[in-house]
Image (cartoon, rainbow, N blue to C red; front, side, top):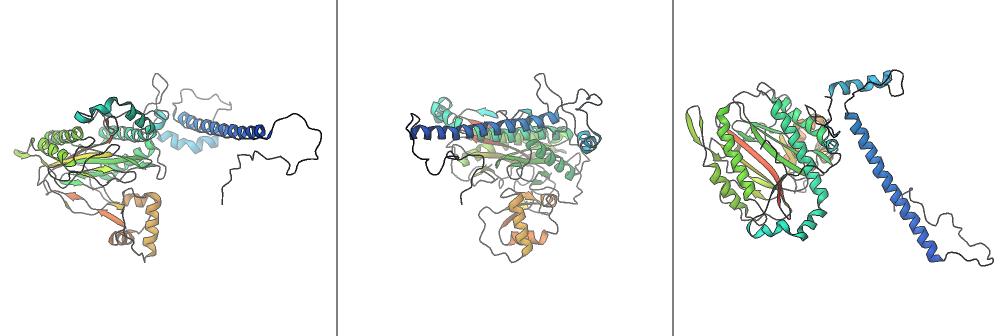
Length: 472
């Protein structure tokens, strides 16, 4: 059955079904002219509706923008602009808790600390800041000036704006976290601050925009996939090495980016080694580049570093069974893996692909195993057609589909979205293969692992490191 839009009037509306009695012929418009006039009327109506929708959206944005404007002058008593007592009571708690933003010399909103202003409002809907541009070399150098390829990019501009918006959210959130995080904080509080800031800045909206995957805050010998479950009282210590790995997505396009935080300067060389290795991998990447060649370059750079800890010298080892990866819409691991050691696949990178280059450097074995309580989960992309006999499992899977789709999630996210007593049902979904569990990945106890990661896109004319910032 067709869906009829009541806003669009039938061009023939009001015309009698049968003609009136014939009378004397008068000069007038022919059938073709009448048809053209009717079509023009419909087209004008559509154009007017479209223009009205744009104006309505702009007005809504202006209203939200005005909500964040600093109040420089109180409304006069008794004026129509003054808040009524009921208005004041309903909005006072939110207004008091939110930091007041300021304006720059051009009247644009500046971000608050902690960040609360949506990035879309700061940039008034775009354009958003471009990432770091790296030009292609050698046989691909022609791409930089190709008019045909530039036209191809122009057609993808909306995609670029989406991922740049997500990248700017990541930059602003991590800048705040780097200032705010201190020893003595609960790991739960750290993760929740990351997540709440991300939700506000990206304007979380179902599966259209939000968090890309659970916030990783793995400590010391734990390399990846640790986030606190409810009730976890782990506290960040001065001598800890914390990998803060979090993601932002807009329309399923995920920015995957991570950095390492330490407070004791003795770990600086370890962080430098891994940061250098990550940048080496990004520089080596490009259209038609073999993935195994990137891994060889990363390994050579990382193993050239040594770090002295408490009087003992360690060579920095790449964690050989952890990799970078391609990223697909709503799919954090897109199918291609980027090794951080020599060997591996000879598969090539292709134009238009998104990749996350992430490297892990360790003072331990340079090899991780699964160990510890699991917090990370994700719906299996190519899940088997498995029967479900448990009503609770069916309900939990429907909940996962609704709130996360194929984006990874953690147990805290299930708690937040209202699920209770779900552990048995979650285990059942894992056992039958509909959901995949991602337990913490650990090197030997007593070792230290650092991580740095960036997301980039292989545009037709250049490589754009989307998540690059002034910090790393």
